[in-house]
Image 1: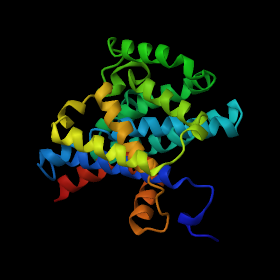
Image 2: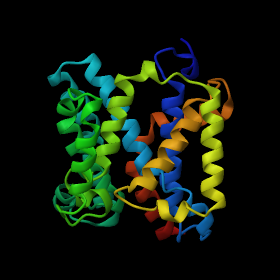
Image 3: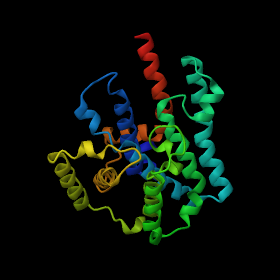
Length: 268
């Protein structure tokens, strides 16, 4: 059997970027509890936005392979079942009401993500049928949704379809459908690196902190995506393998890191 990093059916850049995103999520949630360096924390603002863009890509992949029933069965159950188990364990160890926490997506603060991500999966087949001409319409609808509160959750969970996260999700779908157009070229990594240096020099990172994302957040996120997408990552590199491994299990890291932090605080 081939080792994971040599399997041809895995996209190295996709797993790596998912690993990068989940590390940024965890690093952000450690701020104020395990470290207090604002410079580090500010540079994690791309985390959730990148996850959603990548989720659009993987969703389009699934829709290209499976019929509607298979898609919903595989994608929804892959989220719902681990979410239920994680909510149960958090309720057990942190002493929260299970059913209430499950329904309200509040067993842990980050679970607001699950609330709107499930909504995005429900409408994904419709979005997948739209071509790139609908980008302006989805953009307008997404930012309009940011103006109407849908729940009492935090961030994107507060708005229907995650508000402007909807646009990033749709961008991911469009990217995959037109992926042959986006040839991987090293020059684009250089341009992305220069843009990130510009953002750093002009101290624009704090302005990228919006959840749901604003335009600068999206621009910052897509620049980071472009940097690594065009690098032709070496799947045998230990660092690439590590981040790719984390990316494969990013959902479980996401669901359980809050519980782990709570237990560490409680016992240590």
